[in-house]
Image (cartoon, rainbow, N blue to C red; front, side):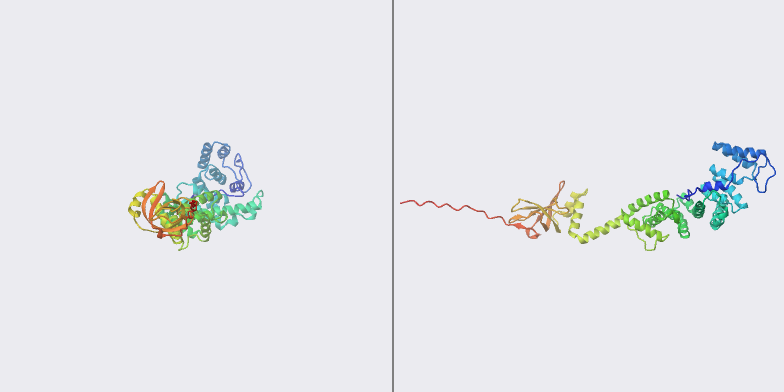
Length: 444
């Protein structure tokens, strides 16, 4: 993640640079030539050069190339040699040879580009290699229009491809300068000195606000510290890296997708699922390389606490019951009942009457509170009702818990009829008795 993106869109830059370096078999011997025509020193160089070109085995090809470099360091074919070392993935050689070419010709586009790409592949570059790469990158940035002057365009390259190559190489040069600034931070990361890395990357972000790579690196350094209080800043920076378009200093599309997936993971872990909030954060992060002083990203626990508080205010009785039920259904439910509920006065609760026993002149009422159908509380009345209670009615009641069953769940409460409100009771129909039969009068 700390190497700048060099796979460029549009024209293949390497193909363009190869076209600018004309390959041809070396002449058999030194001979009179036109001005500026390249020529070998002798038959030995000719043989080595052709051996390099014809060899297909990479190891042998590199061996021939090294021998040619050692025996003929001052050759007319230094640019071809540079390209060959690049093809064989020898970044240190590319930086050194490219820097030699640039010392003589600072406007050598091929050498400039290959040096800035190769420096990032050198495991432990020397101070001179870093300095030369930085010089090459700054030269490309400051003189890009000179490098891509219209008269320098190969005839086989279209105007559109020439312009695309210019912009792509300019972007790589700028990214390389950022990478060079970031090196102390990367070294700090390797030593697991994450706070030092944070300081370096913060400065890089401030000086390079259009670098998604710098923002991502800063976010990663902060995440690695594992300090929850710093996570919002880390998530902000990674959101910025994911949101920036490639054309505006962002990561390439493939890397950007990976960063976006990582962002979703850490954002959800910290804040909870919130697609709209995540999109809003990306837009906010695009506005500034560092978050404003009052930036706040709530944790999922803070959000849950706020929702619970809002729930308590809007539904105090239900909230009270949900708290009681949570404790009762927990691992220590029976102990909680014995220590906190049994024979204790419980504030008013509200629920729906779902059953009564018996159906008329009931002595027990079964009430559902947290849902509409399942009875959770049995009210044992101090006296039977005078009629038949209407099921489905919402009632409010006060009671004293006297018994508890965890499975199936049921809390039994002793309750006075006078402390139940909202209960609808239908008086029982009067018992109709048949009229008494009169005895027939008897004759005297």
